[in-house]
Length: 375
Ligand SMILES: NC(=O)c1ccc[n+]([C@@H]2O[C@H](COP(=O)([O-])OP(=O)(O)OC[C@H]3O[C@@H](n4cnc5c(N)ncnc54)[C@H](O)[C@@H]3O)[C@@H](O)[C@H]2O)c1
Image 1: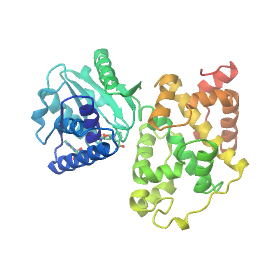
Image 2: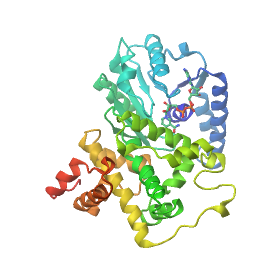
Image 3: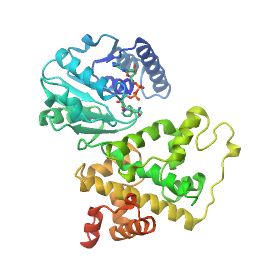
Image 4: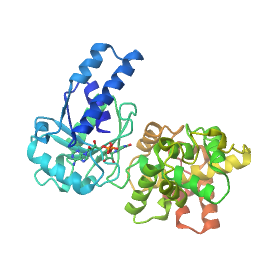
């Protein structure tokens, strides 16, 4: 992620210092950027001079003290709160008082990272990019409770000048996208585990009927089952074991078996011998049942994200359509289906299973009663 973010900043004309503790990581990063620059030239997106200028703007170092003159630090090191806190403490004494200290963490508390900075916690903020950073337009901005409004404005202004679309999220676990998207995977896994449909059929329903670019199982294989499982597990723990985010044994077993997805040649699907993969059972009624079940769970999560004031409906729509390329914003989709329909579908699931996982968001229930829409 660090290399990608450096590429974004350098492409926007900034001088960048790319620091990593490990020289091998710097070597890898430099070589990787060289390859990308070549590819962009071949595609006619950059001239040789532009590519050289971008590369020349990045200075690689394994000495932290060299970051002292920068105006903004974007940290993207290992996802470990203690290691991040100690780096922020060190940074605080190195950089100027006006320098912004940002973290690209996907799951850790920005407030907790800011608390490690004793001098100026108000300059600490979350700036969460999506992978690959140069291609994904969305960036979530997460102020900690200590963050000064000037820090937020500066961060937003900078990111916009880099061509990014920013959304604002409260400092809560998984922010917007990684939280709202959980049911896309978990409800699909649940449908599969219950034997309602196989994964090829679920993927078919979500892509062909739902219009999603990738089905949940192809996407989990693409992300890597290890990475996807870890995010779910982290979110589950962070929300005090709310059953809505419960991880799946099916995915855990795949991780244990080393069936991580595309990167290992096998996950839910077999990528070395595709003839062994099941063919979807293209039955419309079943496909629609699958789509609606996953969709109302996604809508419920998006509605709860509004209910708990994590983000505005507009930002949630923007986040899900640009961060994970959903075909339509979930709240718009809820308006189209009818809020009453979403509530009835969730209540039907709750009545059947009697599990807290299927509890309907109070916001949806209130809106249905008042016959309201999100937009
Ligand atoms: N990979 C993603 O899709 C993604 C997306 C959004 C956010 N993030 C977040 O970005 C951060 C980095 O993730 P990644 O996937 O790029 O990880 P990564 O392991 O690929 O890269 C981390 C880099 O940090 C370096 N590093 C580790 N400890 C260090 C230290 N103490 N000081 C300096 N450098 C150190 C490592 O050498 C490595 O090059 C994490 O906080 C992660 O949650 C990742």
